Image 1 (tube, rainbow, N blue to C red):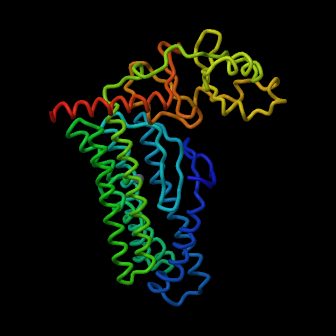
Image 2: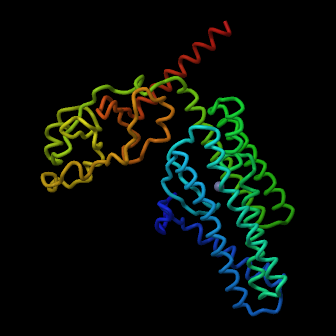
Image 3: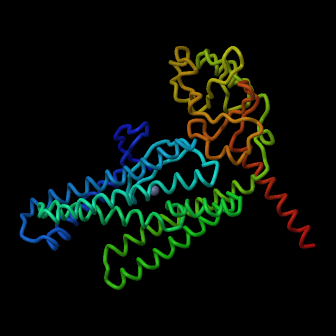
Length: 383
Ligand SMILES: [Zn+2]
């Protein structure tokens, strides 16, 4: 997601807003101010409707934020990191940096979002009841009433059992619990997502043709987003499935060429890059413990005249940005941990000492081997 404005940190989670949110904010606020509010409560000034519409739109985005933040907080409590939250065109995304390690954790992380939306919906509904009973200001009642409705809609829509919606995660957790097979469960949930996405597209087109206008096209867009995300998840699930039983030590390059972390870029180029064929070097301290990783791409950013005065560690990835795994770990578990900083490479350490490195090409090679094995297995059974 590009063109995201960073808003700040909330409960230790980075919160950003994509530009597309402003389009939706304007559509919602103007829609309420010009459409719904004047119909429900006529005879107010256009300015009053606009203020009520903007306020309702703003509180709606805080509701959305509470939903996503709850995913992030519960994920962290269950041992899954969160890279940040972004609000965008279709709501919000909490970018989790790992996979839950049990069906229960999967269920808790996914379920808390719709639960929070339902609770908010209930609170706004109760507030609406109070406002109506005590003859509160009409436009405040209208705004709070709409917030009750939209939060319940948000919860119900997210509970549809189709990945990548929260309901799809709940379905995955249930199938995982029932079959004991998380990859199978992920494939089932993502196929349901593709099906639901296509159903939404068909329904949206149908009501568009029947005269629903923008609302129909909106459903088509959401359906398209869901089906493409689900297809990507399905590919990922099949990928991890074909790596079943493979350990990190099976694919890693053992004892990679390492570089001391306290040299400058010029020395690095002369002593290591120009004399080795590698494009990535782990940085180690004096005791051989990994402290970073540097790629040729990072070194290229340093201007030739600055090479002698730039410390290598200052352009490299910090240990915090690197996936460090143990040799016995399943290779599939490494996939969600890979970071952009290292261009998908991971360090393998045992008792704090560096023992290997895994690159995307190692994984691709392993996938090809798995595929060849499967084909051989198939031809054998069919013969
Ligand atoms: Zn959610």
